[in-house]
Length: 135
Image (cartoon, rainbow, N blue to C red):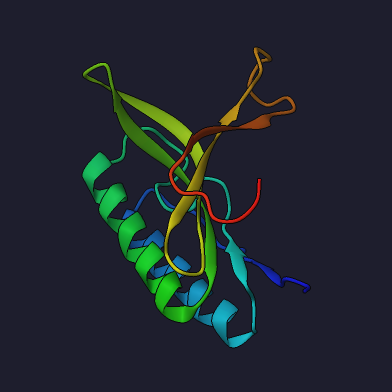
């Protein structure tokens, strides 16, 4: 069975509500176009910076996952995201992948592999939250 992947092109700002609104519009369009998944740009929710509010981004990501689920579209959400590790807030440039059912399947962190930023980057799975189907 072929899958249809939609890509969202959008200007990314440092205003989370503005970015969220654009992504919601993209979800609606992807659903109307028959896409199975929507891929958003790097940093599309948070903006491409570390000065965002962790709670605001987490809540917006949850709303977007719910909207995508309601539209029957999977979501590969590009965003910077802050995790609490060892009692400290750490910022990661991530792709957070949600199934069309709204489940968070896996998070990928963009890493430089020790190379200076701006050179080729790789993805590494930081956490698999749910797994469905064969490996």
